Amino acid sequence: MSKLQNKTAVITGGSSGIGLAAAKRLVEEGAYVFITGRRAAELEKAKKEIGRNVSAVQGDVASLADLDRLYATVKAERGGIDILVINAGIVEMSTLAAATPEHFDKIFNVNVRGVFFSANKALPLLRDGGSVVLVSSAVQFKGFPFYGVYAATKAAMRSFTRSWAAELKERRIRVNSLSPGPVETPIIDSQFKTKAEGDAIRAQFAQMVPMGRIGNAEEMAAAIYFLASEESSYSTGIDLVADGGFSQI
Image 1 (cartoon, one colour):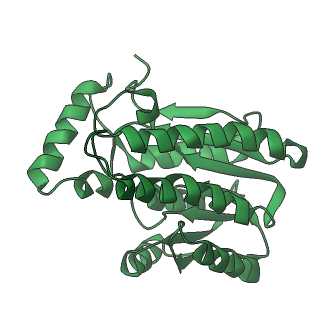
Image 2 (image 1 turned 45 degrees about the vertical axis):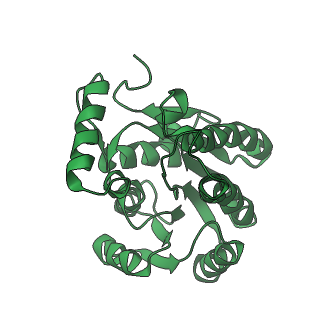
Image 3 (image 1 turned 180 degrees about the horizontal axis):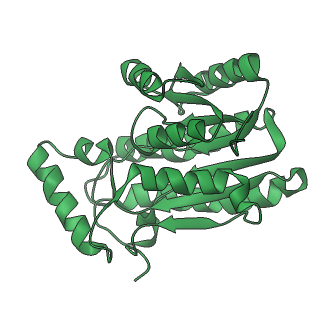
């Protein structure tokens, strides 16, 4: 029997990249998965790609009404949640000097407020003994120019992991985070105007990773599966770093 048979999972930001790869992996392991994302067309494409045991609910995690609609759908179709993967996030670069209130609010609204209320509103549906996985980033450990606000939001997720693990331990709900390093996903190209710029940053990141390459979404999906499943039954409050040594060596 598959290890996630009869389990229900919700993945925010599930239409591409790490979220999509995680959805595929959890379905392969037997789970029924709900994916959510802002772009309806990409969400439907992802649903077809996953192929089975999946529902797609369009929405923005920064919108409390959209989160309410997501969880109402989950409740109506499956009754509860065993696995919650909070993956939705955005990246936007700016220096401290150039940053605007709009830049700051945009990133914090999705990466911190959206994360917090994705968990807050899921809580009534989370079954005892369930698992919550927050997808953070190894950039929280580094001092990169242009990524100051983004890195701060990912550090906030690490803090949420610890606090929620302590709060939910009586219900045997484990809360852990994953900190990927540079990973091949569409989010890389979204930061740059041309493909050449995206390729240049890929090469730059690969040089900074001790393993000599950037990671792939399937590797992050394997880490998410580990944290979501009973494979990590004695782990809560941890941050699993999967970055090829990027932040460690």
